[in-house]
Length: 443
Image (cartoon, rainbow, N blue to C red; front, side, top):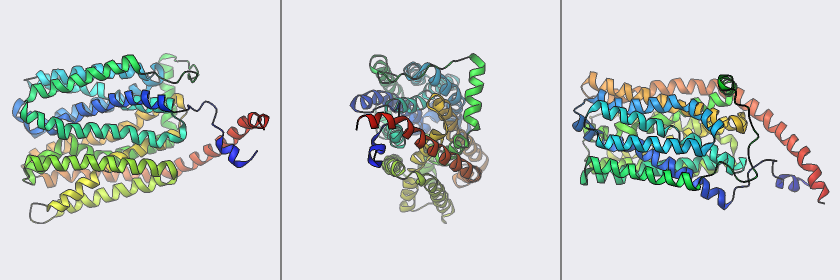
């Protein structure tokens, strides 16, 4: 049996991929795309929301903080739900919730009602990305994992693009209620696609039955996932890389560009669009690079953190009060790398956890970036109110969280890399022994 024959043999139980896998997975990613449209819709409506609900910076940040808090708090429960119930049921519930939340938000005239609507929206949004990751692992071969993860993230970026380009224009032409109710209609549409077309796994690739023994099962799943250094490394990677770009797009980018840099809304919207386009470009590059060179994960992570910190330092330290346009453009391009870099966290967690635990591990990883985003959203709002809207002081809060996350990444990287090398070696040996008889019999 030649080395070429060994490489061609599929690992037992590995899904085949193919056109049908792309179609089914595409339905799931559309649900995620619409979820991101709903999530980021407030980012282009922040100034309008402040006028509509008569609130200041701290209260305005509460919208996004609550939404992100709900999202982060739901990640482990959602991971457990996906592992236990399957993707279709969880995505169906998620689409129902975020559609209802967006619909209510569009009709809201009071701050408490709008706040409750964003919480419901955040709950539904929380059920989408982990479900899409699980769907990809069930329909595509494991070697396609990094590429599928980055491709899923690109759908989220497309949702961001729709918010910054389409919703921002609708908001200033059609008005508040038609814009948000129209977004809710998109949620109802993808809900129908899930009900009629989505399947949890290919025929003949049903996962082995797992005993779900109530609270004991939950404790085992969480404890086993957390015990893996790869899961924790993934969480801190997500924590350290995602939040600068998310906070910029989710709420504070538009006010910073309009109120601090005195750009027009059109120019600020163009820069937000640049962040999204750069995100898409970096996502395609990172996905291809990690699929071919697994060792590039940590250098990419550290590089993105370093360049992001350096660019923000240049922006915040520029003398004269207003930054030149070329520096703002550079900042937006750099922030575009934050989303794809955060996806590397899932690539650290995937080899450390078996398929029946990957949903739970993904939920733990996904918590990282959203906790960092929540803390930064709160810090910026509080600092703006306490400093008289000094955006330069407020944005300095990002350096604190980057330092915390970077420390944890460097602490965990060696243990994670060592265990991953050991598992890969064992997996290769087992694969050869399992596939050898079948291959020999065919010669």
